[in-house]
Length: 216
Image (tube, rainbow, N blue to C red; front, top):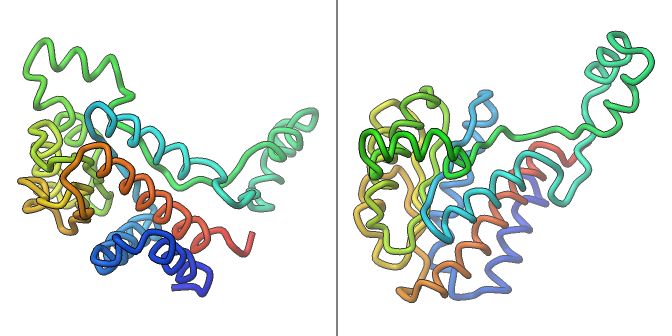
């Protein structure tokens, strides 16, 4: 782990001391995600309600620059310039390196079709089954840890060989028991759990960004 990456988690715990009990699991989740992205895997994320918004938020932070610019490699710039001499450089100058992440709640057509035709609590599991591959990662977000759609997706992911991470409230619920790593933030109040979740996933996104893109 790079020095800047370590600083981010230290800053998180200094700003939010209540999360100190989550530190080992935050570090473990980071290591799973680092391994996934190092091996060219992708991250699938899901949650319901406010946690669906968090899923989108996380994907957005990973798929573009968060705190760093993430300039694309010179050979990619050269490929674009060679293929399209008139516009290639402008395109390359606008693109940023990404950590591939997909928010499953944003797949509205698939989610609503499967919910209508089969079962709403299996829609995320269907998308994990269709998109996930061994070595990818799954992040399920549930304030209670008991959202059936998220639990079913986590079970599917784990059975298929994905790394599985749960982000829950203090009890962890069923989700906490089926994931490789469960980050159980120290509250049972939904709004407070969600506030802690933002702190945790912002730190994870920043840690991953500095780990992969700090030199750029």
